[in-house]
Image 1: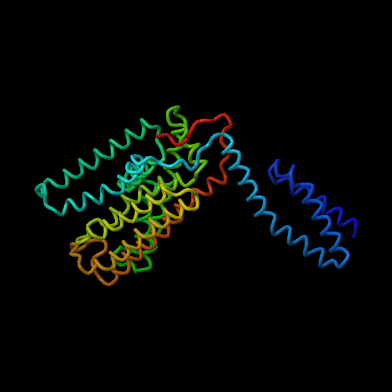
Image 2: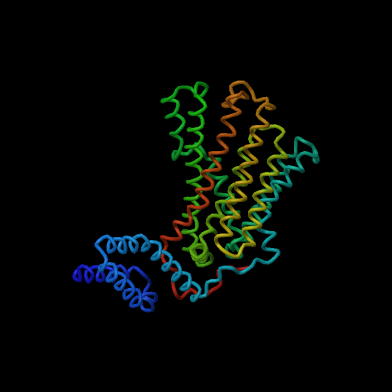
Length: 369
């Protein structure tokens, strides 16, 4: 029995190597002594007690190792001068919210009929495009501070959706037609499956493009702090993706009538989530703010589609004509989108766990004004 105890203590000392060096130096000897004492006491009782002690340690070991490594990582980042909770100035907060509030303002303005209706679409498009371009130029001059990331997300999402015939997902519709016949013959489950797969591809590709973009930005001396900032606070990448939801919701109401109030309410939810995110002091609060804003917006979209479908007068042959089936497909598709959006907002946390620590010589503030 003593030989078994010695062997288990030796194995336990090897398991301690997975802890950070500083933690091992401070607590390693004490943990080993406590474990050895527990083994000796259990060995005096029975093999079953000895096995129970070992299984308890094996159960707790992965979580403890992960927690201590993350704690050591945060301490190292703090010692290297990384500033994670620097509050935004009022002008920065307002600049961050413009991307969420402008579509709301222009949608309300469009209902006034001023200027004349035949010019209003061009007028709003020019104003919105000009405001977006101005914000992007200002953000580049300021080295892309965190408030500007939502603008990049809006541009990425709009670019990807407007090029939805790309070879990356252009195969999907012909495959479904070949497998299930014309879309007019698809059952409700098949339509929902198609919608779910298509939305997953769009949203995943948007997040993947955001990751590629920030990796490219770190190659430029003027913007290379962006990636280090995201590695400190992974919710920054989630916030970039979150900005794209403004355009995503715009497209979800395409060809709808009587949708202005619903659409503006959904954008207001996104704006509220962004405001809470920028005011939050911890990563947990930040991601909860984004998840809450996205959830509120998408459930408003679901309720809007369920309410508005009977009021629509889409032309004959439209992919989803107003019908009882459409009243299930459209809200159901929005609920699937909501699920994928939550997954994509949380996904950057995995990148945070896998990325290496930032270089020790980086001493500058990562939240430029």
